[in-house]
Length: 556
Ligand code: ISL
Ligand code: CA
Image (cartoon, rainbow, N blue to C red):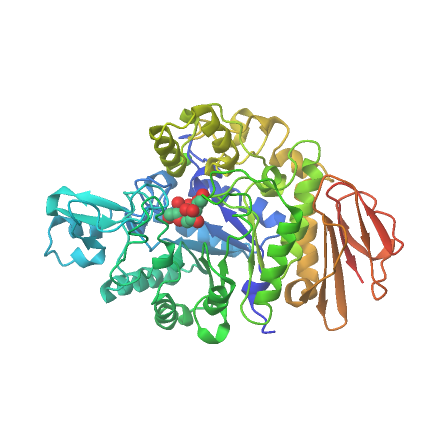
């Protein structure tokens, strides 16, 4: 397998608004991040993914970009960015930016011009259509609102927005739009960045004619089939690769919700020259229902194993996986799939073990390295997220019970993972000296970075150890993934194999005791334990008794 730095990388995702506030305005910022680079380095990761920091009115916390060539006022200046980048590089940390080009902000000057008149030369930068019979041009719903169309008085037409109405979709059919994107990417590469995470990049190509979904079945408006992995998406990404990416030694990861395995292979097979890897969301969608994320389904270990194995085996030798268990759009992994009470340490470490021993580039979401948990907000006013508000308001309009809504929001809202990083037990968890833009989780007095660094048994130190283990054992990066079949549904076991090197990972995905039996070709002993989340690894005959959320890595 070809060796690449981005395959060996461990990525740390930063959501700048909630990371560290340097000037007391309650909002995390670039100097704040720079001041914590030593901490990030200490963890052992090698790449930082910075969520959007461009100029933005923050309808969707920076995922609505008003100017691609400047920094959001609250976050600092280009100068601050240069400092962050050079300080990161000094420490051997690479930095990738978030590229949000499926849509812009409606305050972007391209859109301001585009909406100003039908014959403006930027009109065709966006997707404008006439209404049909006084209604929207088609029946598509957006991710955040009941209709994907917004009527614009000025010119009497509708524009398409797959996200909020302040996030109009760019028209990728227009070559000028594509060239604008390539230009801005080049501009950032020339400033020295190391790559891009590409927001909803599998949605940039829409089916020509923008057909309605189900003209005869009102109520069912899932239009994904007309824009997810649309007809020209691979052509566009290949063009981007030829014109920009191929000129740099960079790393790319495309966000590809609802992608199939075959599509993911097409995006990432090296010969095709598109992207290095994509984020697929099968694990993130596990606990939703038929109507999407705002339903609650219990964590299923067997489903977790099935999905993970499917992607590990399916991508092997073809494309390259990215591995993640949470991000700024998802609840905290320890609360969601693990146990944030009695077994917080054990389950957070067990999931760290999965994350760092699978094949694919691992992404650690800020705060997970200290086992931060979901947030017990009290009322809807405490939330900040545009998606949460849209869901709440629409459901209330339809007569839903507010208390029931709050129950699901409490579990599923994106704000669960957007609360400030808990640095210490000082006021506001040491995140800000002012008033934080979103409440700090009250458990910061016991869960915080300061405590985690002191405690040699902490989740932080376990992450550190596993990152180190991955660094020192190429088998964990380049080795094959070989599932080891187990009778016990709650046990996930697999080998990583590279030449003569073999490592065995045994995980108990549940809060129950469990057992693992090794086949004859696997000889495990206490001396071969490379990492484990209990101080003494379980009995090691060829049968292991596993305690709740126990995780053991053996070097065979
Ligand atoms: O957040 C989601 C579900 O809770 C997803 O549907 C999400 O909207 C989707 O994965 C796209 O996410 C990305 O683009 C959005 C932005 O709001 C997200 O923060 C970003 O990660 C629009 O730019
Ligand atoms: Ca600030």
